[in-house]
Length: 185
Image 1 (cartoon, rainbow, N blue to C red):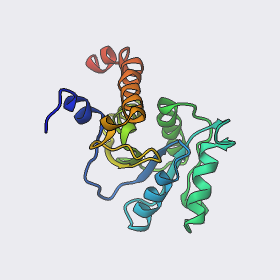
Image 2 (image 1 turned 60 degrees about the horizontal axis):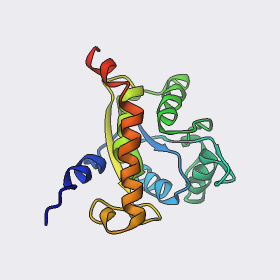
Image 3 (image 1 turned 90 degrees about the vertical axis):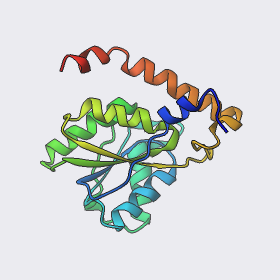
Image 4 (image 1 turned 135 degrees about the horizontal axis):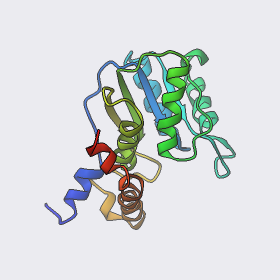
């Protein structure tokens, strides 16, 4: 069945085929599914590093980085493959500060996998594309968050509609000012 909002679904929900990359990027949140997916990709050999990103959030009770890295360690990841970015307060900063971590550690990053919530995938991808050099290829591996939101069901619940429409608004707020700089590059 088609709906008038199918264009929103196609725009917001991004998923690409995953192949070998230089790093797995995880924009912060307190959703364990993010690190479970990142750890799975790491264990399958898709990338040698995982870079969770996120600063202190009162509702988490720690930094998002600490929350996510503990999950990775519980799943048996060696600490040395978990890179640290624990200052970011929003998705643009996740991308900006992650880029700095990779550069400071002199880690090559021609291709990166972004593991993010399904309903956050477009905004996350745009943030990393904006902050990283344009030559970097991004692959997107979304996860279903604790609310169960997917491209097939977001429009069936009040929380799904609210969260996805908030994503649409945030994309407008985040990127409206950047479009001219993208055109003039």
